[in-house]
Image 1 (spheres, one colour):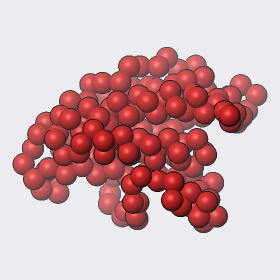
Image 2 (spheres, rainbow, N blue to C red):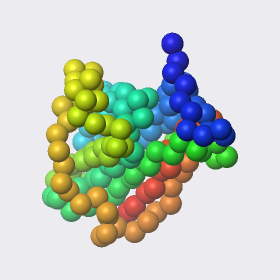
Image 3 (spheres, rainbow, N blue to C red):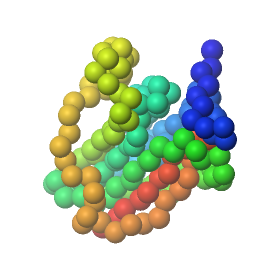
Length: 166
């Protein structure tokens, strides 16, 4: 059964809309995994699974992915959730072929909405494929330069992708 979320009279979306948008994010994550060689496609799919769970419940604010070389940022992408994206034109995923670098690591950080309370966290236990923990890293990407982005949308649900590069 598909759940419908309504944020205002003009902003309506369903679980299917969230799935359509997260499918594009998943494609980007798999491309990042493949081009860097840091994650497997299966691990990228596990991240996408958890992103979709949180997004469907309205708990996801943003997703930030950073390629690090010996702890130094090389590239980054951030997906910001928008629940009034009804006027957006949806882009195709892609353009995220990242380099293979020495000492490579990928960091994925989730940002939650205020609705992700301790009760909500308790209710979500056991549903994730990734073991999540706190992160205190700076994800402002101050040492990188803005490098464009894309919009992913289905009805009123969307994610605005912002890219950074060295």
